[in-house]
Length: 282
Image 1: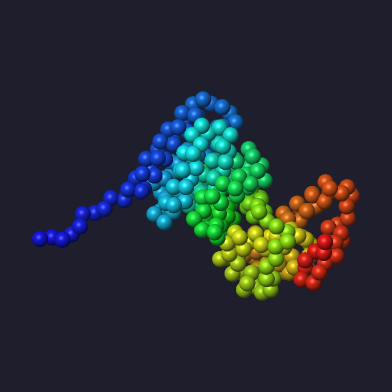
Image 2: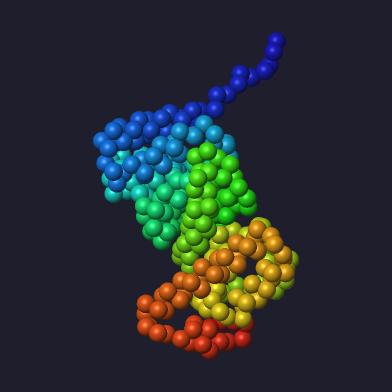
């Protein structure tokens, strides 16, 4: 007599697919109303839910939390931007299609970098399964992926806007990195090329935010100059280019903030004295 057990049906993917299909029907019914300010958000949600079948078994927890978030707000009124921002973050992390980058660019056009980053940080954190924020870290890696411009240029939906989307993604990543950052955070200094390469390749968004905190505390400090020098030593790598660009964005933001707060303010590097190690004095 055979002792082979009958195959066990994987109910969870089926359940999530059914719930996603129900939500898509609701989204499309809302789309029929044709409210101009909702069109982009509904398209982002529909595009994410349509790919439920591609979610890997190990990512079902995150996807289930996204589905539950959308189900929690059936009217999709004032929460629609938050739901769309969350769906885009999860789509980037788990799938990373060209349409996810295009959706990110569209959301930035609609909401602005800062508001989108605030929504993705606030609602995305609740979708995480780990305090190290692996989903957000994965999304950030996709946003800053090497060769992104070439991949976008080769895709028919993004070819004509590949350069614009690539630049928007960099600025969106910078805005997301700044969420929840406290300028008083400190971490051990990066003092070797090996450390620089390791944190660029294997760091989490929490680790990156701590180093960004030291950058925005004084974007012209000796420590920041040291980071730029390490990037130069790495050579023409993608990670070096990204980190150099992030430093430049932090400096631009500091200049803009200083110009608004104090008209004709001197260069930020001369406004504050510094402690050893590059930290700005109060």
